[in-house]
Image (cartoon, rainbow, N blue to C red; front, side):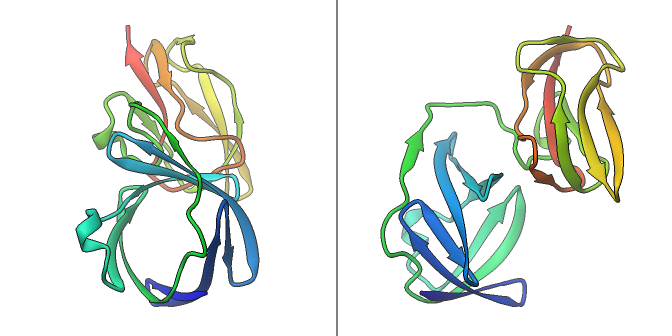
Length: 175
């Protein structure tokens, strides 16, 4: 068990193979390597995580990025009781927590919320104004619409996922 401090808050954390226990709450986790980033799904929510190079991880203080946002992490104690299973993926389009500026053709969340429903799938052709997904924010259902016509190249979020303002929800390649 380790104490992990992130943004001034402390958490008791233990990694048990494919599960992580945070302050007594257990979450299933999956880790997948993609194009230099780790895609971590914890409790059904996907995050893009970038760790420092392996040689810089030996310290108790780490500078990490989660969904392309920087965090200072301090670890006191032993975090893991065993390695989490890792799925390898040769490559894939960027997305997840990326911002539109980081992903060409990215359609972003205008407000933080939860993905209620995804109305399209990768490979679908969409026209300007077509509904891509429904996002619940501030107890209201918001339609996220295609800004132009094209082909859906990626949907880096899942139904039920919590998203942040500016996070990429879909990637559309223009016609």
